[in-house]
Image (cartoon, rainbow, N blue to C red; front, side, top):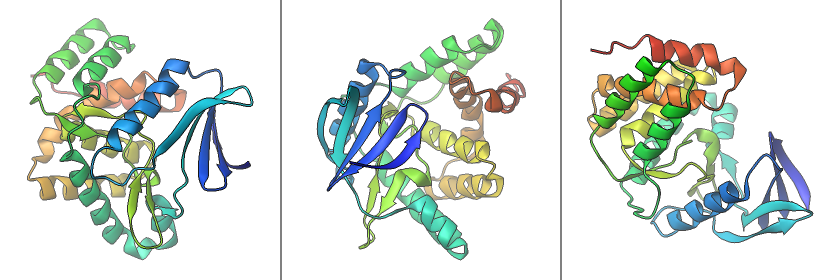
Length: 246
């Protein structure tokens, strides 16, 4: 096995045509099995998704083994060819729209996950109450939501086929809430210009009011705050607290 990537709590290894995702003890067995199950369920759609091959303990670590997809991530392509950023962004949004048209009825519901995260956040009870009310006011959709849809989670093969990876946060729910999370991810990465271009393009292609997605942002920011990343807390608190709760 060859180590090809390492992040907090996870290591990715290449083993021939397989990719092994190894988790440390900070991840529960239930979370790891749930990630594999989410991905297996999404495999049943028309999307290109790496197939789960097994879930097992390898060298004492719970691991998910899946197909290795050869290619560059959309993020890498954007870095290599900045002159094509707009073209890549349009491709990215089109893929997200295609994804949101899929139905995976056995996935958990985004609304339930968001309610749980709002309740677990450190915001005052009054703010949490208003966030819950706002969340309940959103239209009830059953669209496939990735939960972490960003260019680094899209792999483009040599023949141009896009594969969407990392389905650990997949749910079914409101597609605009998934778009709000993508926008927030760009903002947290300091990619402000890309974030605004993305939101404008997504809303134009889906005939969605920008204000509608913006009203979801405080909910998404509150749910993100539960990760308790110190460098994000002040930024996320501003998104939640500047809300007009009328």
